[in-house]
Amino acid sequence: MSTELEPVLQVEEENDSHALRVIGWFSVGMAVAAIGLYVGREMRNRYQFRQRTPYDFYSNAGENPISEFGVGV
Image 1 (cartoon, rainbow, N blue to C red):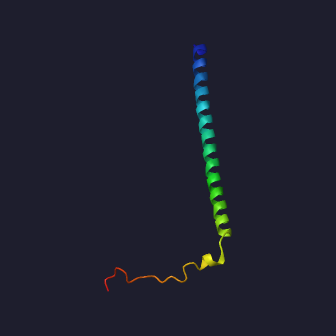
Image 2 (cartoon, rainbow, N blue to C red; image 1 turned 90 degrees about the horizontal axis):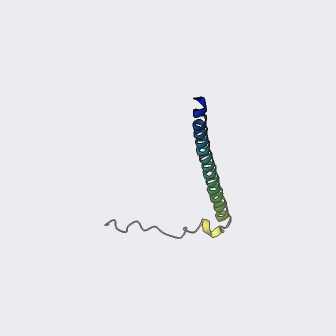
Image 3 (cartoon, rainbow, N blue to C red; image 1 turned 45 degrees about the horizontal axis):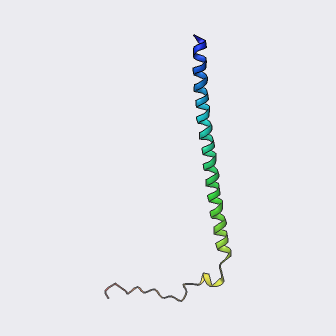
């Protein structure tokens, strides 16, 4: 009777190991994608910060806010 159960258990173990391998590779891929997105965002932010000019810091200094519009005064 033990000879009949061995092939069945072996097939189940192969299916389980295959599923775990797929889940493992998927999680590794998701981690690599998340790290890539984070590194790309940081690089883009640093590039944008480096491209600023002194006029960018005072770009809205001359504008007067119009607060009376639509107030009904």
